[in-house]
Length: 365
Image (tube, rainbow, N blue to C red; front, side, top):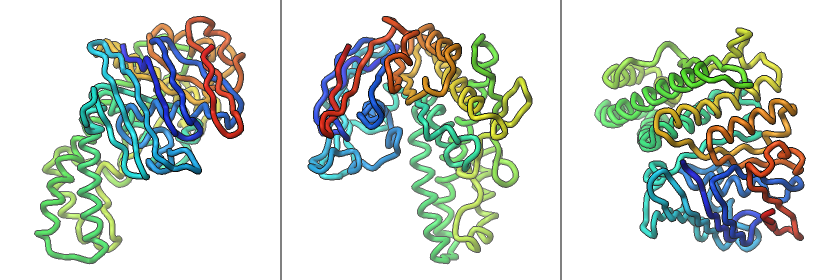
């Protein structure tokens, strides 16, 4: 199991201070719009690698107008040990991580904490640009392979440097070969992890009886096919250098991948489904992610579901809660009113967030 059993927030967003003590059950959070519910989910998302559910800078997370910096502390209970995790930022600097009072990297954090989320910004995932779908898949891939973050960082750093050379019209091949070698090794690892994640999601959906539709997934490239090995990707980067120089950016690699989805039972592309069907497909994938991890590793990720209940009818909402409880995942869910979580009853712990003159106050019920 994986659960955040305590959460301390200081000067984080609208929360001047909050000190929550929890168990491994789901967490149902209700309150008016703007009260600070999503800020709690954002805090939990920072117990994993990356920039959190809003992809915000560390400076933007600090409570205003003080802008003193912020601190989050929590206890992460795993199937093995319990870890004390702290993450913070001072004066707008990059966030720092400590695990058991020792400085640690975000990659190290990813090895002990797996967090997956579904937020309202993803509701248009199937009909907007490919970048959002890549991020969605990468968050799931990271839950299966914590080293995915390291490969992604290495690839993006090398690609930024290569793109700088392209924009400056540098033509000396020697400058490119080292960067292209780094991109090829990291890029092919990224692609393999994504392919594996799609395979695991597909298997987890097929093996489950659920109220949510099966999403048929396909990983494609913007142009042609992804090279079949690191050496092939290196050769493709070399061969495409003249074309890349003409446009000033890299046109081959995993940053050009896209995740296509379809409503399997209807044979309908996800982009052509109704808003409700698109949401149900996303919920199906998040649940499949949790089931796959439970089957393979005996542990499920922490789920963050922002305003998910409001977009489901009563039957599907009850089915979602039943699946969450059956999986044993600590799902943090938000909604405007307590009635949205009635079906959960005492299977969850309930929090109310109240806006007190611009300060968020959290009441544990």
